[in-house]
Length: 112
Length: 113
Image (tube, rainbow over all chains, first blue to last red):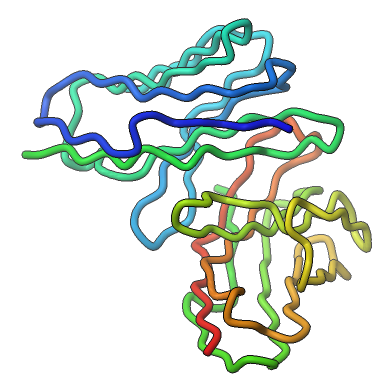
């Protein structure tokens, strides 16, 4: 059964720093890897989706990479801002049932 | 933009009540999903549907049922609410294939007393 782990569980950085969030998954036979953002008490917003055949995806200050062989994905946030403060979740799509398996998230706080 | 709406943001129910959570999407998506989110346990899939009147169990279907009579609407039913069903419930939808991204609603925070 797929397991997705995110480390660290929480991260606090000063504004302007570049940072990396980590995601690891146990079953490398994934269809895709997705990154979401969740603000307190709200639903999830899709940030980036990397298909299994891709190595990375970029959107503005965000860059996500995928290394299936090592079972890892990273989300790079450039020049962080207080508005980036949220919980970031990664999710892997795998298996015959094509279900998304979510990590527990990294709670990011960007200090002004 | 895709819009996924959920009927209530907050609900308070009594143990044993039958509870209906409604989800509507406006983008003609084939697939719809119900998750619950709990601290320390993350998001867990309860049920999903890939077509009208079709449903599949997720990881934690016990105590729940679903209904999809129309393509745009997916309902989650708690037949007899229990305190361990107190949680945040999130609905999502996606286009044709399962490789598409999922779009989430704002969530319903349910408290069962």
